[in-house]
Length: 378
Image 1 (tube, rainbow, N blue to C red):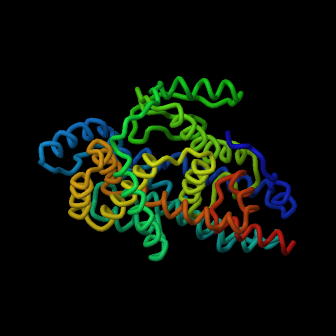
Image 2 (cartoon, rainbow, N blue to C red):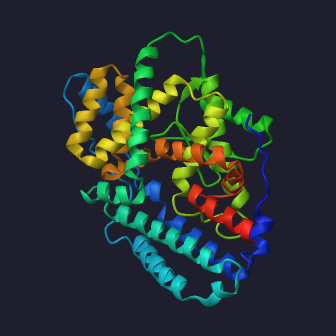
Image 3 (cartoon, rainbow, N blue to C red):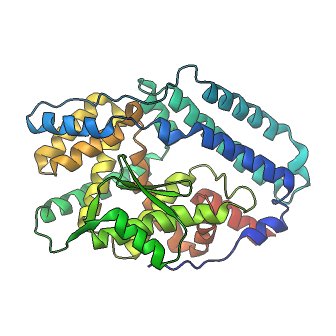
């Protein structure tokens, strides 16, 4: 298992005055808005599994088709989303004018962190309101923004991992399959970790939502895959969020791009533990390639899906990934994994101390850089 060590950075933020009651109320107010918006939940179709099954048949019979998703919640004139928009716009204006930050050590830096995060949350609301329209891929590029060089390097890695995966694909495995939900519950018990683990219908095999560990219903994986999933979800997602619950601002509400770098660190933890197997690299490669294609155009995503299948990639994996990146009309959140991993890996090689910030809350590499630099100046 990955050790849970690291420096507690909360005393540093408290020393700067970032634990004041006013800032605490601000953080919890933002968290309440984020929770009501429920970004990924609203962008997830209610008929995902049905569409994966239908598309698998269509592609197997050489009749490629696009997903026809339905959603359980309307977004047009949704009062929750309209209220969230007003609250975030009001907060954005208030952050520029509020004199609360003038009395804080590094108050201007905190103000900027919160302005950027508020803008990111507002962009997520806009994405929900655009769900299913041609605006989604454009807004996705704005929400999950990477430099041209970052994407170029990530695409090169994806291509290399794909070729490696083709060579290994189809080789017999001696590992037996176990119930994922049962194995995770045993791990939680053995580590005395209080996390609720439930099965549900979902596109991913596992994911953390709040204080709950969600697992795809009926999922069976190898024992090595159990450990990979456990360390990815618990140590990169669950524990930092749990530790941040009573921490000073901005650890709980997070910083801009925190989710992308959180995913990047999760893959890095997989690699450190020896669980970043060729099959996993193949999966990440396919995700990246299809996410890039769907952000380009729907026609491009269909063409890339066919190309990957024709190259010899597993049809079920490719089709499920195609459906996954197409959620919400082409959200393609999966574009974040490889660039996030490369960015976090590079940064922590030179500045391993920055990981302490990521262990204790929802902090991006950019924010960890800023906060660490402020520590040196203090």
